[in-house]
Length: 209
Image (cartoon, rainbow, N blue to C red):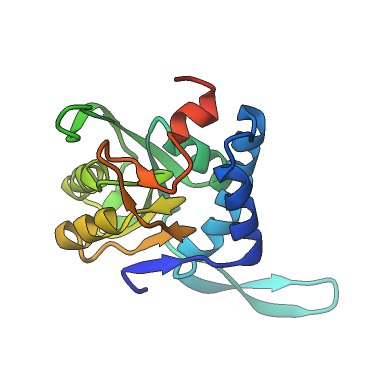
């Protein structure tokens, strides 16, 4: 995979536009995020390894493709990552799930860790970290650092929106981790928010401020 993949499918772009609108309700935002995560999941899992198994159809036997190896791992970067996680689990319900709790210090914009719980055997699984926003990239880099320390080798990062600054930060720190996103926006503002963006994804998803 290339370091950055932008999923420009018409359905993805349409749903993203609805999510950006300031008058989209909390319920509508949450539902759209679930729907768009399903579409993004197709792209981020494109390189899952396959094997074949002998099955019997109603007409004959055949060698049919099936996923190979251990179930993949999904790691949500709390709290907003849970919105992407829920949708992907509808598509891949057998995936193992982990959580990394990070919040961004409003003064320094640096990540502060408060929680980490990961599946076993990450070295044997494709591991997909999910977070709607790749803004400064500091939290994303910190999360990938933790996953690599836990043994993950085959990593992907899935987000809804990315900034050029965040993509550059991730590429510098983890050039081996491909990024899949629905859009690469213009820039960050002075508070580290993506422009034009869609606001704070966690607040919009959970109805908080």
